Length: 126
Image (cartoon, rainbow, N blue to C red; front, top):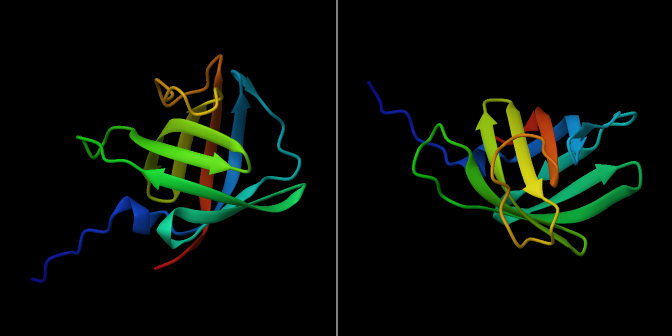
């Protein structure tokens, strides 16, 4: 029986993700037109929202446990964020502190100084 190849999170994230939940400072926001993230190789991507497309960058950092939330650094326009992410099949959750990238979000959940996003996969890059 052939061994199943282990794909990294960097590879699993490639594709288009639609935002299904957005919480800003602990308050869920109404998504009249959900944003999409198109994540490409090498930590690059595009955010598409009501204002049109704009470039984003991301970097995944390692974690000790495959089941634990893992660290992500995220940059969009002039904004820098440090946060946590969890990838579960076609579901992606990200929480970042909105402090200019100084401190990583402490938990993967909505909170007082946190932007929290949940996404579902739209298109996968196999």
